Length: 79
Image (tube, rainbow, N blue to C red; front, side):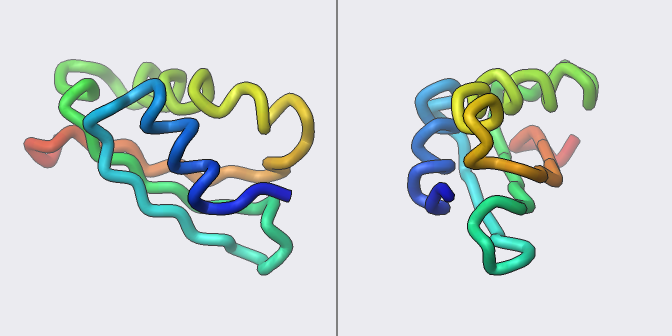
């Protein structure tokens, strides 16, 4: 189990300028939808954006605190 604040902290550690919103999809604190908006996504394709987020969340993904994750990754310019 992991909290939304902890998840946000992991992402902001890797992407300090990120605006992060987290939704617990099932109420079990292990299935999440996350939306991340960052300048660091500019010029990166969707796969590279998702890799940055998965890298940031590597620890809770590996130890099972995150079971499922839906990602929306956007640059601040809307791309």
